[in-house]
Amino acid sequence: MDQKQGRWAGRDENKDAVRSDVWGALDQGGMAMGPTWSHIPNFVGADTAAWHLSRTEAWRRAQTVKCNPDPPQIPLRLRALYEGKVLYAPVPYLTEGFPYLRVDPAKIVAKGVSFELAATSEGYMMHGERIGFEEVEPLDFCIVGSVAVSRDGGRTGKGAGFADLETGIFRELGIIGTETPMATTVHSSQLVDGRRVFMMPHDSPLDYVATEKELIVTGNTSPRPKGVAWDYVQPDQFETIPFLRDLRDRMLARG
Image (tube, rainbow, N blue to C red; front, side):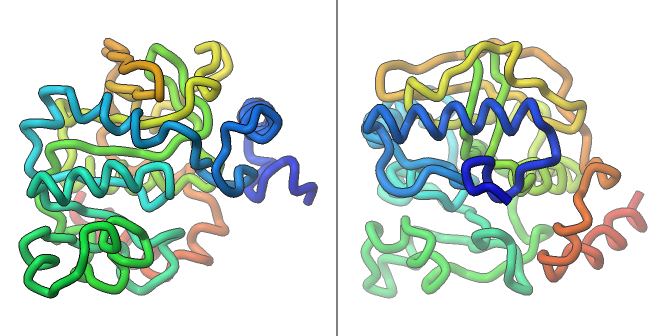
């Protein structure tokens, strides 16, 4: 497959197009830091975007924070640890036999590990506590990675469907509620017209979008999905995520 269409291209041509436009603009404009195509792209000003998001009352109140594993959100994971928040972060690409890590800042200090290391995906994989989805405590604040977003809270990821799957699982388990803030940080060039970010019923709209320039409070009041839309889970996800079939069977048995 053409690399310029992204690793997971072919599921939705409209989303493929907006991703290609954003990745290309980041590359051509010199705003990217590291690889863009098929990634949640790191960007110049990610630390400033994190600062904007950390100024919200919702962030300040939060004691438990879930964050995606990608490089542009390292500043947020670092802030969470320095502020004494318990951080929950997924195994990148969910390829291990366990899905999540709990990163308790008090335990990280006791180990003599720096927060700067623990905030990276490599660091928290080494020093975090391996847990299952059901062991994640109720979340006060959720951060997802994004490729393209709109000011009204629409979001498109890199196309793999990991964020939607995780969020759906947490909603079904009651770990994320209807009032749990959903947020992302992106470069301002990743903001697109809302008509280009088509949200499916199983997608969770964003409450906050922070860029290197500003904090956007979306005011989105769309209904939040109640759980996992298993019909939308891709066959390759069942093949590459070791625990997914068993998790599906357990969750369907619960309902």
